[in-house]
Image (cartoon, rainbow, N blue to C red; front, side):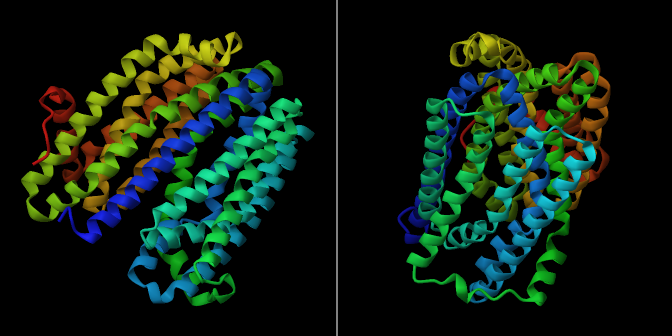
Length: 439
């Protein structure tokens, strides 16, 4: 099996995607440090407020269609042009709706001119997100090398643009164009790769029939996307809005700047469980078909591995974060180090939540996952309303931690099928030292 052409092809695909993730993560983190030191904590808070608002709304550019199109490009390659054309139409309309909706939002809220421009410049990049349909095509063709090369080049160009702005001592507004520049380079790269392969975008044929089919299939993923993004990003929006009303714009921007720097570092660390899950997912999926006991054993072993990795990561993170942030970002961002050390407690949910994805996928519990995400988002918003005025950004950390506790662990107690997974998670966490090679 290991010498087969198919195995080598998928291994090569995984290797390219892994390389892509690692290189881009390193580039983004390094650029973020340089830009943050230049802009300072208050202006970083202003910029990340705009990014957070657009991140929550950006699900409109896909309308939940991503997974459906990726699946059907594999199952029905003969429908390629109709699928790509119809998805292009969905994403373009979604980008227009997103921009119009955000324009109404910022005007109704009466935001200051700078914030309006930051949000709308960032949102305008979503008008070009239709180019991701080409990404889906290459992934369906198991050509991760093309995807990785385009992603890396676009990230290099965007990072270079931001570093030039730092060298020029450019104003904040130009950094908002950084996201736009990255999306443009990403779009041009994928269009070039697609056309270079002998294919033509002008052959795409959007049809109302296919649009309806995709939207009928994808609406649960749209709701899931909104709920998940809200649970992940709403804390940054609420820190700015709540503290801005209570303590003033300057204070709220500073608090959000500290929080957003801590979040960026957390996202870099939380990349680890994704790699592990990708590596073990095929073995778990195969065991689900072959032997239910072996399936449960492999799930438990995955939970052991994730919890062991959490301990190895979280302990030094708790004790060294403040020192590390000051070293990388400077004294001005010391509070971000304190916040990052508190994030060490929340990191458990990143590791175990990613691992739980294997159970959700293999059991087909997507509606259950949708419900838990909506519940988690609601709890997070409710607790933020209470804790942020009292504890500031630290309150947002505890709010999100409690919401993930409910959506990842507690909800599993309410159905027979998910209680099995709860038992496996607890067993894995309490016996993590029994980690052994998968059979």
